[in-house]
Image 1: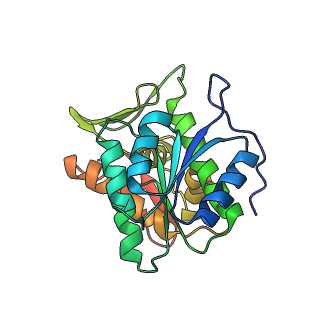
Image 2 (image 1 turned 45 degrees about the vertical axis):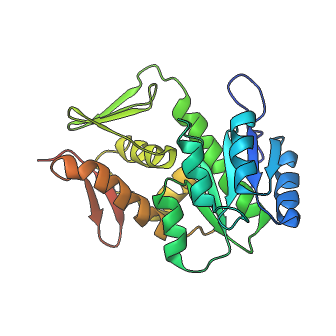
Image 3 (image 1 turned 90 degrees about the vertical axis):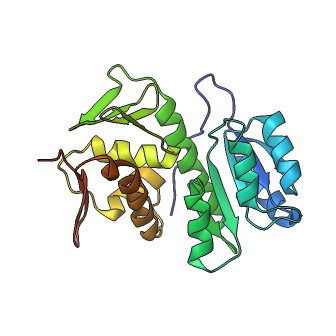
Length: 242
């Protein structure tokens, strides 16, 4: 059970802005109510076009986005929003049971997903987790650069380089890589990663860790000798190439 009741606000003290997109008013009203209880500033949209317009006008800090919408789907919504240059984190809502549909959302750049029907408490916990790691990634550090071999991560500029190659990461990929790099040569279990990166303390699906580890490998280990390794039956570790 998630027991974190700390109020989340932006560094300037303003409330977190959340855009909730769903064509079922019963769902958008329920999610909005729960987020307003968390002191979020909430706006809703019931279609893809409304969502794109609201994202431009409202400039949300996080988007809760239904996959199935009456005009165009949530993946297209995110594509259009991201095309404007914003990297706002997105949590997908989906009624589809096929894991391929959920993975498609993550592959497209989403940060997490929840399958309908869902627990409101779980949904809020995941949204809080996304917001926390986004705020954390944006926080300026006294010594912002972390290095493991030829891999460098800057917590101030949000940049990652493997040698001379810049690596583009989503907020979730960045937080996962940062957690690994802050614990070089230490094997981290899926449970530890879920707790730290996704803030799951209610039995979150470990498969999401495998998915994101594979994303990092495609973006980082293809640029040189492998840095991210699987320790079978234990977890994952990052260490300099030998």
